[in-house]
Length: 464
Ligand SMILES: Cc1cc2nc3c(=O)[nH]c(=O)nc-3n(C[C@H](O)[C@H](O)[C@H](O)COP(=O)(O)OP(=O)(O)OC[C@H]3O[C@@H](n4cnc5c(N)ncnc54)[C@H](O)[C@@H]3O)c2cc1C
Image (cartoon, rainbow, N blue to C red; front, side, top):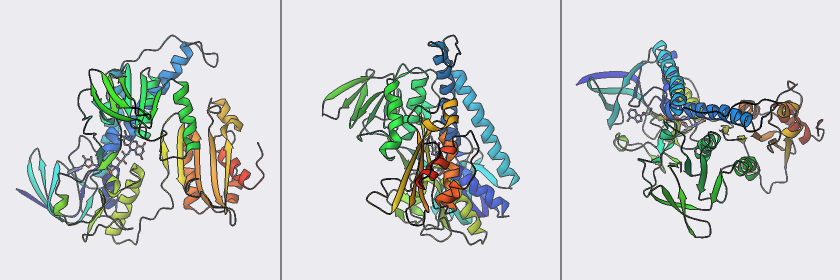
């Protein structure tokens, strides 16, 4: 068997692992990156963030033309649109391939050795990788685990045939006539909304009493309104059962059995860390529930074994893994670093979009030492000019009453994902309301709602 020794061995080329790899390479560390998946970039790049946003974008284009055809919009009329999903998927796949190649080029530039194959660990610092050219035994001084996560399967709704996960939903050859989404979290709703825009009849079955239960109700109301307006059937407080003969059995909130017609059932009930089948149990690392336990340096309980990304817990978001990957690479190179962000902003690319950063109303409930201020997009000129002012969207700022330190910022509205980094920056820099109020915001932009929400918290909003 071929033997390889390296300073750093990274398992998994998702956003956690490949970023760690590039940073290790930049820092001059001898690095090997192993991935058994279909392309560099992991879940996010191949079957997650990027392809979902491409399909969402295509769905938005389709909806615009459909509106123009259905009586006209903004004085524009058009003929009814048609979609060839195989071409849409091919376009999406082209973007993924371009990014796969980009990651490969960046790793090469950083002099990271990439090995394609599945790794299995015999002990904490030794693994065997099964490659097309035979097995390779790799030993390393430092190991970074970045094996990511996988969709949770329901035992009574196993994936296969017309029961699909988000992965298959991103590569359908045609738009289903009737799509039932089981699980009203962000992945299910992003895709459910996209397919509704593409013309599918969509139903959502969610066990909780409302959609996107991790976000506060005021933020999710505009999304619920969109779903209602667009005829998406919502079964809240309901449980899915088995699927057969084109029908999904559910039990409604009132305990009544109901059958929903479905060409496809998309199961998006969560993701779980990928901890099985690669010898993690032989590495002697402690666990924190289903996740690998790490400290503030992303160190596991085993010396010089590090873990980043979805494997290490919530929030399971691409940018968290990347940030952890950079920190670990720098620690291995001798820098004094910890992973201790003030916030990791989260975005739902639903219709409209939702952003949440820092503390929300739930976290400050009952406190009389905070100010909560909301500014609606309906009072923002740019929002009206781009048809983004009528869906109930707003920006909310939460700050200390005493020193005006900003504690949390949330928004719901079209395109608000683009405000997320400005929110995170303000929180990370420890901004007070006066910092936002004193920053001249460009006109006309959606960001003016953030400015106005901060002014309003200080008692002197201009445009309301
Ligand atoms: C549909 C969907 C949409 C999403 N949208 C967003 C979004 O908009 N924004 C966002 O921040 N996040 C989003 N996510 C979540 C995001 O994809 C993950 O948080 C991110 O990919 C986690 O990165 P990671 O590096 O931890 O692991 P992953 O990206 O899961 O990568 C792990 C890699 O490790 C490899 N691997 C695992 N075990 C082994 C082994 N034993 N040997 C070799 N290789 C191995 C796998 O092949 C995989 O390539 C989305 C996810 C999905 C499914």
